[in-house]
Picture 1 (cartoon, rainbow, N blue to C red):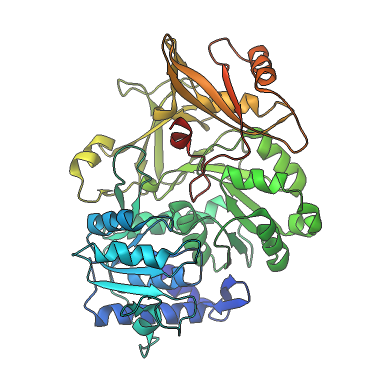
Picture 2: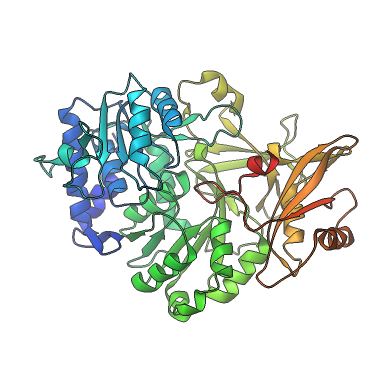
Amino acid sequence: MLNLSVLLEDSARECPDRIAVIFNDVKLPYKAVNAAANQVANGLAARGIGRGDKVALTCPNLPFFPIIYYGILKAGATVVPLNVLLKGREIAYHLADSDAKAYFCFQGTPELPMGQFGYEGFSNTASCEHFFMITADPTAPSPIEGTQTLGMLMGRQSPAFDTVQTNPDDTAVILYTSGTTGMPKGAELSHMNMLLNARLADNLFAIGEHDVHLITLPLFHSFGQTVQMNAGFYTRASLSLLPRFDPDTALAIMERDNVTFFAGVPTMYWALLNYPGADNYDLEQIANNLTMAVSGGSALPVEVLKQFGERYTVKILEGYGLSETSPVATFNRIDIPSKPGSVGIPVWGVDVRVVNVDDNDVQPGEMGEIVIKGHNVMKGYYNRPKATAEVMKNGWFYTGDIGTFDEDGYLYITDRVKDMIIRGGFNVYPREVEEIMMTHPAISLVAVIGVPHDSHGEEIKAFVILKDGASATPDEIIAWCKDNMAAYKYPRLVEISTELPMTATGKILKRELRD
């Protein structure tokens, strides 16, 4: 028997008074987070919600998230975290698709009224029986008349709860993929999937006696949820929460809380490097405290990796994974040399191959599709046997990502299969073009896509953000690219932009650029 909530319970027993969660002036010790999660579990059990039921959660990085997350797990139910940017129609789809029996939703802000959107989605989902509004003030009434609040659910509930014992293969979490093709699909991750991925912290991270994580990665996403929240609670760390990333607040928290561990997507590292107000903070203190920096979510440009390491005297270690793999599959470990541009080697208990269209392993240096097998691979897509069969073959998960191994067994991500550009019969990998363009003295950030072309099938287009104070025309950039790349690779189209569209997790939305 196994329940993922043991991560919180064990730490609450071993170090009850250590601070588990920090949010602005709020500091909650482990015993308080565990007691509150027990109240949530008691409240759910009183409403008939238990083992096997699905409970959805819309909440930004606030103390409510881990309290509700582990409370759902303690009750034996499955957590269905939802992107905080979803609107009513999208929420209704996720609630119905996951068979959610209950739904917790934060009230939001005037700019992003999550509670309004959430209640709209709930009201249009006949199968979802309970709606709980998470109010910023737990004692406040719901802004939507007649709806229950989290405070009402927890009120008068005991801070003790006998956690429902679940099997290792029971579903702990359903994580919805971004839905780049078709409707989003829910990846079913078991208690064992999630627990073992969190415990990879033992040999992947430089764990201190008392680490402090800055968590600005959204907790509804697999990266922040596993690599920081679950792994952080497992290692008895303190988690300082930032609901929305901005470089100024991130640096302020790093300085205030003596942050030792930071995880981010490449655009966050880029923003910290290029923030003009960085010198207002004690960067020497921040650098001295920072012992671990992790990047994932998408490929980190080598130039950003080098510059960040020089400024903050910490090496960024890249890893690779997907929602379907809990998420970590490969990582640049601390006990062996890392390689810039690589996402490391397979983690403990996980096999990774790179195969061609005939399912045969390719030679080192050759490109192919990355396939993964191990304790981290999902059970399947919830209620989608056909979609599961399309990506799961003989125990291997077919990622749709293109990569290559080097002679030492280090994996390099080239691109998504869907992002590859075919220009005049030649395969062009956007990341390769982006890496070269990032070395241009005037370019700060770049995204490369393929656009339709009458004779070549696709043409290469680059969206470019220039460095502060730098100047370059599209024609000048194209000429530079022509001098630095093969003729079939360099972009013939360049557009200067001030910003690029991004997901809530900080990934560049190339599909919006294509549109």
